[in-house]
Image 1 (cartoon, rainbow, N blue to C red):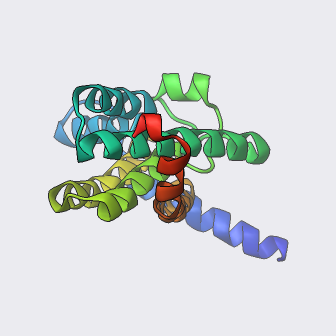
Image 2 (cartoon, rainbow, N blue to C red):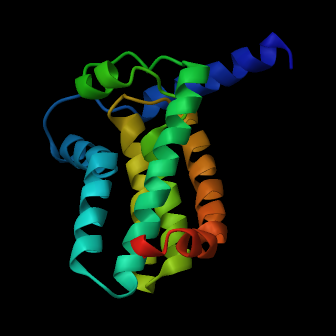
Length: 184
């Protein structure tokens, strides 16, 4: 594709990203965005799923193991893609930890993780959990743009990749449970 296509795409991305980015500071919108942005952190999900896995022995035990495995695979996949693509994060004032630890923005790991978890929740149930994550996932993704740590295209690509990975993990879940029965 020609350079004019990529320039047009970059202009579209810059325009929509700047429209969706909030000015850092106080106020309910900013606090809500930062809360949502952090609610997709991998350490939070792995920790919570680990506690659920340790404290349960029913379907939640199996569900937690599958979701944690998916988050681990997702993290490795996103890390490899970011190292290959190396797109810098947008300039901004907030998110120093993300900017220092992970300076690359494409694709958004939070968006991949949120979509992955939502798709898997639909496949694994229960319905209330799936509904909650289906509402939560796009809000986390948009919060990453609102807080200025991602471009809109980062989260759109992340949501697509997370959806595909979620479908793939659901398809592999029976195989994973047979291969690693001690986790399930």
